[in-house]
Length: 495
Image (cartoon, rainbow, N blue to C red; front, top):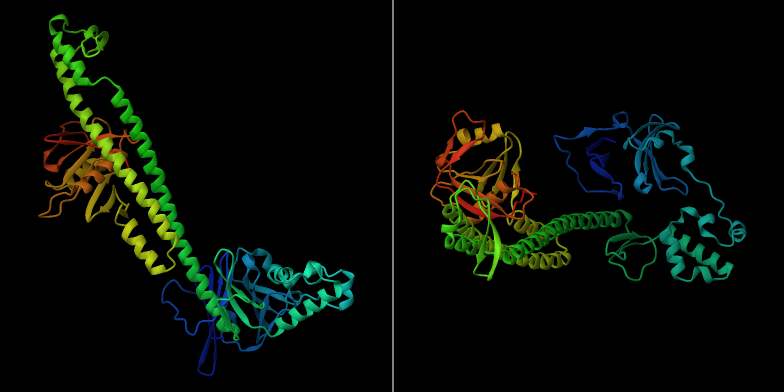
């Protein structure tokens, strides 16, 4: 043995050498999958690699054998040491013995392995014909190490319904086959690769060499696992987006219904303007005849404003109402289109079996259609969206620094209107205008990091940073804004 090292916690590489030829064993032990792989070559990384079982490096392998009736491969070495590959499913491990005592284990979380005895790894079973008859052919008791796959294979061939003597002959025939088997790679009911030593009619691949068989199985399993992992990631992301989009549609429809069923503010303003001569300054409530509805109703006024100013405020709000209806209707249509697209994408992903195609799909759709977080360190949250960098202040002090130290005069500055929240900066790209999708995305962030985070819609103001003034003597982050534009958006973070 010339080397033994690990580059990740679930993997151990053992390197042997005979003359000039190297032989590699890659022990791959995850909780859900354990396997030995025998690559033709394996280059040790210069970093993040640690040597293990140093005391056996340089020792000669004197014997390799399997434990009797147990899933263990025992490599006997010089100096009374033995390296055991214990293949017990999710309790698989590599164990170093000196004589009969455990010296070290690879997976330190399997503390019970410290109490293993080398001589007790062999499992003696009475496999006589008499014992078989005594147990009436009960395989679980007679041969518990046969494995559920072999027992299932026998069951499918009518084992349980056979006379006892036929059961014995069927079992002996199977055991004889397993002494010198061929190796099959088949697909289970979920389409995952499985290696089998049992005679199979429908197989994907067939081998005479066990190393070639297990290597092919390992590569297929890891590929399948990789595909499954990417698909699960995509499914989770799509489900999250579907859930959020459906919630936005429901909330927007509710808000739209409330607006449409409420009395238009411009009509209330018309009634007030028609009755200016009857409304006294300082009035908070007054009953007026609503000629739109042909009835009298109560009007609430701001007592600090004149009747005419109250009407002007209502006319202004009415314009915002029409804008909000337009935004909500467009938002609902956009989200319904997105929901439809996501459902199509889910179906597409389910049919893709090529890792590169999946990865390209993931990168193309999920990392560019919505943004990818770049950096979250320091006083700002930093995002990249469609090539534009968006900075979000984390505190009042960070807002102050972001706006008046980091922000340049032509950067775009955003903030949720009339509530406390983070300052947001879109850094300018020389010679380019700010794209509307970038402004909308930054505005959604400004709304999300404000006191209006839970609102279905939030007004956000934006302007060039040069039109933002610091208020003398005010608390950090308090500013005066000139020439702002207001946009209505749905609060949304970058997740």
